[in-house]
Length: 311
Length: 306
Image 1 (cartoon, rainbow over the protein chains, first blue to last red):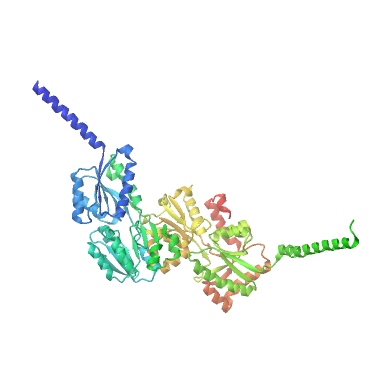
Image 2: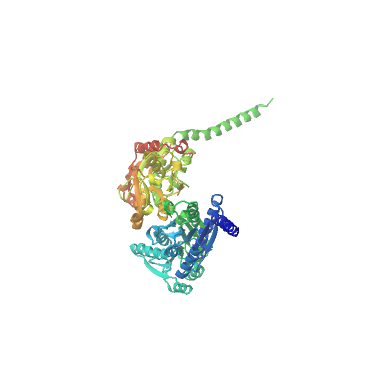
């Protein structure tokens, strides 16, 4: 009799565990790693969450575990390991460094990236990976600078810790070289590197899509404003902190696209059937408040071409 | 009953009224025939850099004023196509028109083509280019489906009509829904910049503007790829309203065609960035009419009232 009771207890416990397991798997868990807690990645994430919530009827309301590490390689790895240990159903990454950190852990969890610059030519590759990257024609920045003033050199703010930003710097170096324009690299690895900008004498400055540079964008732009040097940015200046020209790929569009891809994978589609995409459409914003602060005249034609003008 | 002197006063008053009416009516009636106007108002379609454009045309207007013995005034249209409305409301005597507006003006308003400038490169014609960024992965019409496009204006051959006829020739039934987004940039240069910057994936513009931009900045040529080229048509033609006195029309044509033969004319031509003017015939616009038929433009887009 005792043996029978024990047998039933085991069966009952098994049934309860099965039910619990089913309950847990009914609510997918999505881990998210940002390369840095900067407005661009926050905007991608906001659109991603909204996009995923729209799929709630078919997916259940997913639990989203967000990791916002300080932008350095150890913090990125720790964030990736944490999500792998939590055994989430899917990992979403914003920016190349966070994506690489997850891929280096060699987990079997599928990964969807967003906010990765030119992924087709980068090192963000893997079998269990898809996502939505972007490209911004960097040569356009050189054309804008030339339309603003006579320039023979440009300073490029990037971070050697971030792959996308390094590739943008190198690409600009090649493009500027063809036009006889010198490039001054400004590598931002820590906050005090911002002081490097105090000594530059270039005609204009380009901020690449570096999370580190954008964490201290306010400090960078304050130095540039003092020196009356116009700045352009690959990320939008949503806080209107003082960038004269921004040409960027919409973070909202990338977030929505990533949500759509994530939903397909969470619904059971194979990741290899979800093709990666590169968004090439851009938006051009010209800040006329900043131009008057800097004493720079923006050509009428450039104003006409802008997607948005801040007056 | 009125008295005699009162009747006389009344009669003379009536005569005076009729005399005055006659005095005003006579010149008006003769004006409807072939009155030489006191001034010529010439319209120009907007280019990317209006300031440079005005500067170039101002030199020509001053020269024409001197040679014709009447004031030649310029007015810039706010957009392509507006010029035809102005002709209809009789507020223009002539205009320098692109090939499509010129063709529409000849068809719809009965404009008469006078002369076309020949560029410093020796060209009086232009053609349309359809182009993409080299890294776009777009190489034919099928790959343009559901992509964004930057066009110039619905009243341009190079920046609109050519694209439509090109799509039709490649079997596209509904060009309006073929692209994901259509933007009209208002100038050829802006359409080129839109594609360079990635604000649109496909663009269409005039070859003369495209080639000039590439010559000034070779990086543009390295980044863009021309996928289709239209036939050549007169780039800009001075057209005048048909009511303009024939003598004045002929004098205007003669002055323009003779410019290259005088030293002052040559100087003005240099400032206008042209070698000379050549006579233009309305048959040269037949190619545009054929292209419009091929494009199957909706009726509203064939009239200048759009």
